[in-house]
Length: 187
Image (cartoon, rainbow, N blue to C red; front, side, top):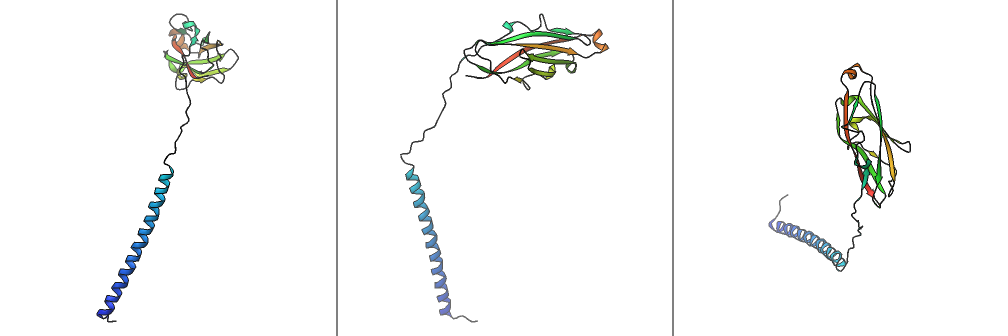
C-alpha cells in the first residue's frame, strides 16, 4: 500500500503522543514511589532505637588443681609391660562462683603414643574419659555436666595401662602430662 505524505505525518503524530503518554505514566509511577519513600523516611524521624544489652562482670576464677603438686610424684611415670598405675588428684573451686568447666591434659609426653591407655574417673563414679592418653587434649576435653560449686572439691582417679608386650620388658614407657581445667562459665 502506498502511503501519502499526510498519512505519514498523521501516523508519526500518533506514535509521538503514545510515547509521551508512556513517559508521563512512568513519571507518575516514579513520583508516587518517591512520595512513599519520603513518607517512610519521615516516619522514622524522632524514633529512638534502644538496644538491649547484658552487663557482664569480669571476675577472677580460681580452681586449685591438686594443690599445684604433680599427679605422679617425680618427673612423670614409667610403665612396663602390662602395667597399670593409678593415682588420684583433685580440683577445688576457690572462687565465690559456681563454675562449669572442662578438663584435658596438656604437654603430653609419651615414648609410644599408641600404647598408653587412660581411664579418668570422677569420685562419684562417672567415667570422664577412656581411651588413648595422647588423644585426651584440648581438642577433645571432658566437659563436666555438673557445676563445681564454691569451695567444692572433686577427686579424680587417673589409671594408665599398657598392653602386654615383650618390648616393654626391656624398654619401659615414660609418660608425663599437665592437668588443665578451663572455666567455661561462672554464675
